[in-house]
Length: 433
Image (cartoon, rainbow, N blue to C red; front, side, top):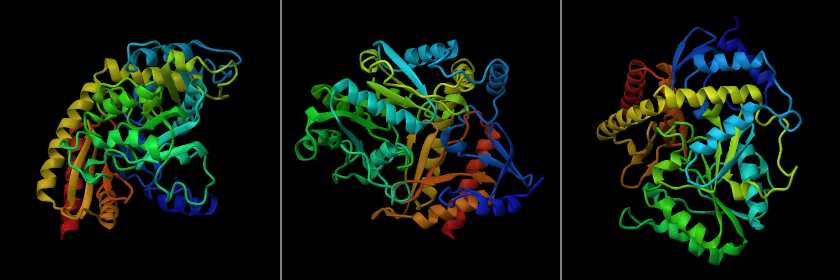
């Protein structure tokens, strides 16, 4: 068995350096919320493959579903010889997605593909071209995905030109309000900025869609106030603009609900899901209003591998576990417990400027000074390193890399969770010294 050190040397020789890795560990096997690396070291996983393993590593029901389907058939291409797995999973997502209207779903392979197709569908359905995204947004690494993504380094630098008719406006980042206001006195004025945007940047009648993450992922787990999305949808409806909600990271139980947008009681026109939808298998989905999804001409939508039968079998098992095995309730419980602990930490550690998020999708924004809110970028990087040394995998994010985020599997045990929280607090204490 090769060690982490031996494999690291091979990585440097054979893999492009643009593909960064967060830890020096190579996985040997993983179960639940524990990863065992090539050196035999166990690590508590607060990263979850960047929000992909909500049901845990190698959940028995997901693995069984994969094995069973793999023995039947691996691929026929749904466009050539269709299969019931595709239709049945589409029906389940259509039922689960918010909104009392009829819906349709198509499947793809990745979050970026879902975003690409959501935009494609929105443009065709509205006969408009412009798409508005937000500051701090992340929507993928394809050309359209990068065009809608906000942060330049490392995601966009040197990869242009980008897709035409994409625009970006400020988001509801209350901790660092782009308008210099305070919530709730502001009454979510940042949402009303969309009306001003139509005057100075792109006409409403030329805008096909507004796309947003309910809780921004790579952007720092930025979480809008309760009135934000209802107001945004109201403005979109006023001008016949489609609201696309990117649930790639927030969906499938990550916030204690199947879809995070349910926290705002909003029914989007189109929803993109991926990551945890299939427990680690490559699968994504675009779910939307039937009158929107059905406008594309025959042959206008498609994907050779989209909706792979093995991935769909895994996805069915994931939903069964989420809904029938109490994992959504577990997510809510984890969120309440973690929020309380993080707020206690905030009282003890001046480095924590804000605690935010939904359910167990939480973040600590680290600052050097609570008054100036100077980003503590180096400290966040050091904290991630200290946590790894102590046996915990945790990730940083945000425009300044100063936000610590939690994406642990929802099946994490109380003991594992407690150990992980103790490691974070211990690392914070070392940073203070």
